[in-house]
Amino acid sequence: MALIDTLGTGVSALQSFTTGLDTVANDIANINTTAFKGASTTFADTFSGAGVQVSATTTNFTQGSLVTTGVNTNLAISGNGYFIVQDPTTSAQYATRDGTFSFNSSGFLVNSQGYEVMGLTGGAGTTLPTSLGPIKEGTPPTGTQLQSVTISNSGAVVETYSDGSQATTNQVLLQNFTNQTALTSVGGNLYTGLTAAGPMTSTLAGTTNSPGSSGLGTLLAGSIEQSNVDLTQEFASMIEMQRAFEANSRIVTVSDTILQDIINLKQP
Image 1 (cartoon, rainbow, N blue to C red):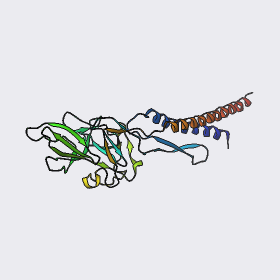
Image 2 (image 1 turned 45 degrees about the horizontal axis):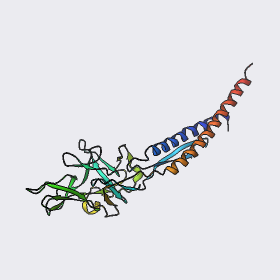
Image 3 (image 1 turned 180 degrees about the vertical axis):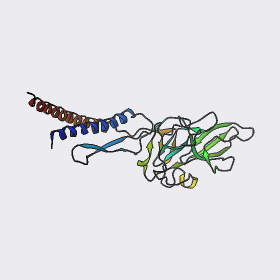
Image 4 (image 1 turned 30 degrees about the vertical axis):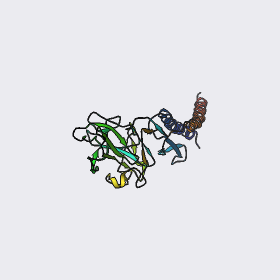
């Protein structure tokens, strides 16, 4: 191997391990981010065989721990599936595991960005919700006021009114994907690329997208999902890549020294 190849090999390693360290740093930075999914970087030799390159940065989609918040509109998914939220301005839809939801001033169930949670709506009295759309508080029966809202493990949104009557006005639905790795993080705990990820059902429907059905997880109201980042593993990966970076820095330094010696030999 030529000396210039040795220098290039060392440089390729510095570039690749910098990417690996960036991934670790991002995971550690998001250790407390709701429903955050950590990632890992894998490496491969270059086509020419001289050097290393990043082969993939893979997201770990395993479930994080579920913690209680005490806010009854906060939802955590125990098992498979994603909430689908919609931007009310553009109608763009996103998948998310972050169930930090609340009802806004217009009565819609929204996330922290104001995106509306999708499901079945339109229920009242003994009529169950059947219309697909953003979940919204129902209209209380004449002469009553809304007292409370609860969400069951199966996603049923039950409203209780001042006269003691109840109605299932909405149904939270979930979506699962055949290839989660095709989902693309766009920040805000949101993912795009829903079509590429292969949704299990092309359209949300109560029979196949209700929590607890068709392999989907159940909901836990008053809870949220924590980050799945394993801090111990991240520190171990950081040390490993740091040592590799240092070793290859030494290769670059030695190569530079030898090249300088060669240049000096040619001086009169």
